Length: 144
Image (tube, rainbow, N blue to C red):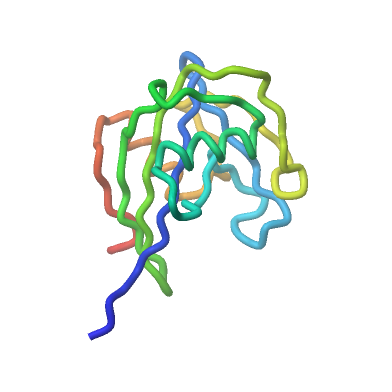
């Protein structure tokens, strides 16, 4: 029997009081025009913390200290053609100014109330934020 391998991604809940930083996807071919959070795949040879620090720098131009990151949720997500493992990390401290470093993939970075997300937030992102607010640290998505 062939062993399956799942892509692993990290997602950042960058928080400022009751607001969360969302980015609007653009020109990527996946969920364009919808809101997500700073995120990306592990490149290999890096921890989830290192990957999150790298993605925050690449996408928003900010520096995050490893001690300021906290794993708040793990999601086992099923899509029609694959399964994924997503780690969600929370942070409310960073260095530098938030700048859209990838305008070719992101049309905006904007703070939104964590309790009133835009209607066009990607479904699994909205679900993960809801679960974070309810202190659920593990979730399944797409299995129904």
